[in-house]
View 1 (tube, rainbow, N blue to C red):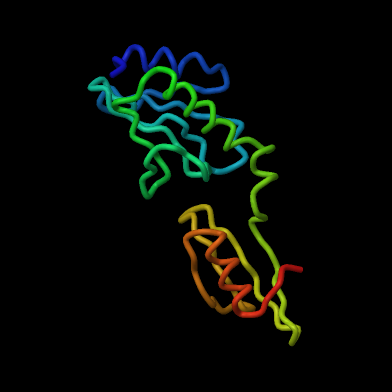
View 2: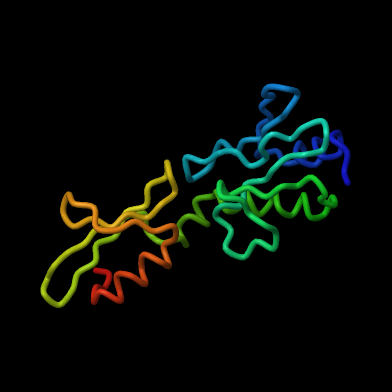
Amino acid sequence: MLSFEEKLAIAGSFPELQRKDVSLGRVNYHYEDSAYEKKTVVYHLHPNGNGFVYAGHLDDCPFDIDDKGFVNIREFAADDFRALIAESIRSLTDEFAANEPSREERWTNEKKQTLELKFEEEDEMWYIYSGLNLDAVFDTYEEAKEYLVDEGFSRT
């Protein structure tokens, strides 16, 4: 396990990250150029060795991601910690965001009925609206897309 100082040195070696000291001796590192509202890459790095790295936009992350999109890095080796930080930063860039599904899409069916699929950053959920009425809510884009296709809708 890396020491707190070793983890600080690795996170601090990324010039695009800004260190933010928080309560109880913990440290966060933010990526201010994030294409998303989410800016925290390293979260609550603690002197006891615990801490987290944001991986909420990584589909192929080899580590367990919690409900908030973070990976616990307590037992990480240096190479894994460094690689995860780099991937986290990449996942928050404009280039990565351009390859993700649109945050708002219009879907229609053969009857010319229209539904709006919208991603809400604050709760990271996909909402389907029929006009002003909420039709359905999904955890992932894939689930929402599958529902729409099953209901006979296609993206326009």
